[in-house]
Image (cartoon, rainbow, N blue to C red; front, top):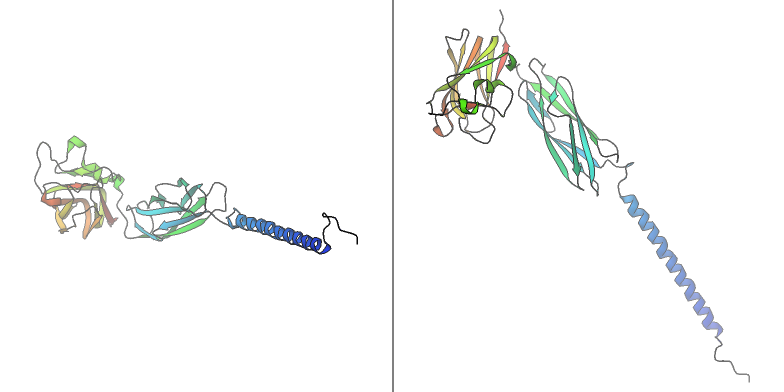
Length: 304
């Protein structure tokens, strides 16, 4: 009997080992192949410039209503919907006769971040009432397509009397801080007319008179209290007077307003008026002070 050497492998064992190696190689191939597929799927799940706009636009309110000479605020938002930061901008194009306080907004947007910027929308005196729009268009540093959002804007109400032709006088004003009467019709909410308080505080009533620069049938007055965070001088009780000659005045309205900084209105009928006077008979916390950031008047030129 011939003996087998110690290094000789049985045929059955060799076959089993070979089968195991084949199985292992096949498993590794599946894993590797799955890894490539998963990587491709992960890469494709990330938005690309061809299939997604990374910057979404928004507007608050979705529809805006304004009046002549009374601007409205449109809060324009840009939201980065990508998982990485982008630089983005928005171009703001108003339909005539609308006017906007800014035509371009730009910002760095971290992933998922929303940037909001207020934009003032207005129309000049004489603009026709009707429906218009403000177009918003986004930019995103070359990534993705541009998004467009059209915001409807309605112009309502009567015409305002142009402030550019007006002049203002008052019973008093605080000269030490430049709070002159003309500030109440300069179109700038950061300036104001304020009654005198230095060297002494003059008692109410205090009044401001507007020369309209022409003869109008006036139907409404809008009063904007100061906007600097203080309510001192905010008129809470008032009279409105009208005159055709600047000497003889007739009272056309009387009333009260809330003690806050919101825009306030008084409606009346003053036919053939050249002058309108707002008289303060009460003010914030009962103090003897009167002030106004802006005064607007509405109406039509009087018929000759």
